[in-house]
Amino acid sequence: MNQKLYKKLCITNILKGVEEGLTRYSNTSRVALIFAVSSDDPVLIFDPQNILREHESKLKEVFYEDSDQWRKNIKQKIKGQPKGYMVPENDLALAGLISYGCCCNDFFFQMWLTDHHPDMCSIKPTERWLEQAACLLVHDYNSESSAINSSDYVLKNYSLQAIADHIVDEREKYVGFDSQILIPPILNDILNISKTREEGAWARGTLFFTDPQRIEDISFITKIQKHERPVISNVKHIRKLLVAVERSDRKLVSDGCTIIGITDAPIPDFAITADFRGDHGFLMLGNDKISSFFDGSFHSTTREAKMVELEELLLDSELDTENSTLLFQLITHMVHAASSGRYGCTLVVDLNETPVNLSGHVLEPSLTLRDPKNLKLTCSLLKIDGAIHITSNLCVKGFGCLLDGKSIKWENMARGARYNSALRFSADHSKVIVVVVSADRPVSIIYSGIEINAFSHWRPVYQHIPEPVELNHYFSGAIL
Image (cartoon, rainbow, N blue to C red; front, side, top):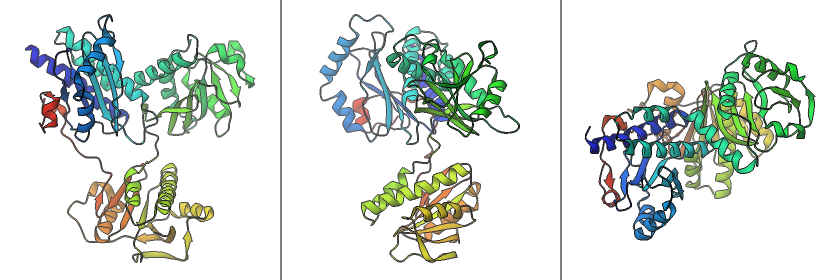
């Protein structure tokens, strides 16, 4: 194979693997690479989705204002280091992006970047993912072998190992002794437990894993006799034991191999914790969330809609900052209530000085959402068919409201009546934001007939293999 083509394929395959893997783990994810193979090479950029287009000034500052010093710093870092040893580089700190950079004698510099989704439990597993991509690129680029598809496969299916790598790194830094817990098998067991029903019910309750050296520091309610302690891999048995701690502050305690007993004491620092919540759950290190798990896989999402676009719309409205902030918090509370209850609803946020007229149940007087009792009542009204009408003075004017409007060209029949009615209604009314919550948790923010938080479509990398371009050409508008 032509060496130039081979090296381009190395980058493309790895980038495609990272992109597909992170899209499964987080959400639609784009990936870019900035690199220089040797110390004298120009800085190249491979950015098929143009995720760096709004960061040109920062990149110029880093790579061009004092490029000689930047290169000298890297040469000093890798001086005397063995081949293949990667020295981490500083994060570029680009808004909305997660990055991982490194340098080594085999591959002078590389910086991987991807989208930072607003609903992520932690960015650390994603950083480990990018670190693995950097390691594989150094290997593949210098191997001069055409068998490079394995790297693509590894990165597509790296979620469990990325989480394990993060846990190992954190525990090595803070625990202070060699851990006897094998992380990947524990993560597999957690997923298997989450998929196992007991009398038709999904798992609920907390199970945490701590090192055998720390078991004696835990105050137990009771322990299981040593010769009868069930092993963690006996998933059905563990699922039955979780019944003893569900819907309580009690927890099952494991040393990584077996269940030791039950405690109501606080979770130790850096214990690996699985919080089972029915059809989903959360993986934590101590009390810090790492990821969620559902449908037999780990995911980065907190399962709570962040609604950044709604917050921006409210801040840009004529409402003062205090009221816009409070209104956003109230709507967020209602959306989370609907999402956790697994029911769909529609919120009409009416910012007009004189509210629009909606057919439905009009309330007299309107319910002020500043009263916690009224907010709780409104969360119950969300379950009734029709929209909740919220006015700019933070009151609920009506519920069970019907939304109508003229047909528009960009309706999406796959999204159902609630969504398309919201599109039509918002297209016909100014200063109205419609929030649509689906029963399966997606949240749509609709304004002026447009879903402003819809994911944009992008061209898959594998349809076209672009050439990396020099960074200065990228600044001048070169298209990959």
